[in-house]
Length: 328
Ligand code: HMG
Ligand code: MG
Image 1: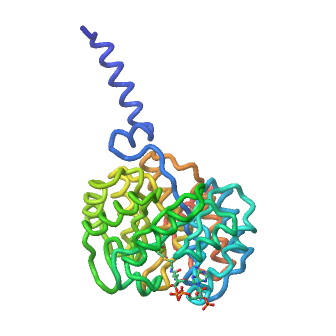
Image 2 (image 1 turned 45 degrees about the vertical axis):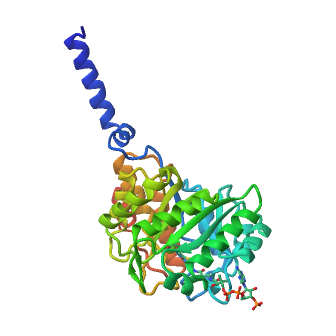
């Protein structure tokens, strides 16, 4: 028989643990730790007309690495005719001095060759839920894009890791709302083909948590949660809500962009990625570990925006910097 004293003790112990963030996360189904991939030097800059110098791109990665970020959606190896801003991918990689995981986006075998020549061990490949977007983005139907991916994974170096993006995973700018079951089928196929992780790209920022939940119902029915990541744009101000909805489903991998920089040149009207600072503030509130200093990210991103004449777009970052200024 358990004494009432002991029961009381256990209740106090549990209550104390629930107040500490990690345990709270576990109890509610959130992951205990997450990996935040920083996309500002790639998705954040790819749509800009004015060329950001190579040293500034590499400096952004190095300065953000110093805040604790360890994984970067760093550059892309795409056609310089299509996306001139990303023409210096190899130079950026060799100018980065931090010891971090650098991922290069590759749309085809040529991109894979360039990424391997630049010494990268991690690449991201691209498909989409909709033909209309895929054709505009990479000049290939979804079927063609999937076959390109299969070839890249089969013929890529054995020690290379592969991330795949399924863009327009909930909405396409040209075809409208997408079928979650179709997206889940693409994700499952990619995992079967040996892709290490598949990121659901909410390219135009139109989804709400209801869309995300519906999509994850189908995706997580078919593949384990540890193979899935999310990539949200913030056009309709839903990206942080969508991040929270994904965390509640156990998703522990997400992209974000310092200062909310970003957009896709082939998705008209799509605004920036969810801001890294906003995601970190959410994670801190939920007691989920990430290893990054949110205020330091805000400082780096705000300075980068000033230096490059860009708009700084993180609400949490602005508030963190204002609160810091008040205490000085
Ligand atoms: P294409 O014109 O069909 O290519 O473009 P091609 O195979 O016919 O070749 C034409 C020329 O391009 C040739 O050169 C190739 O060598 C060259 P030429 O003989 O005329 O001198 N070429 C390349 N050069 C450098 N790198 C390459 C490459 N491939 C061919 N990899 C292609 C097809 C895929 C190249 C083009 O459509 C392209 O570069 N698209 C990239 C579009 C892009 O970067 N979009 C943004 C990234 S996706 C995104 O942001 C979404 C994401 O964030 C998730 C989300 O939000 O959903 C990831
Ligand atoms: Mg994107």
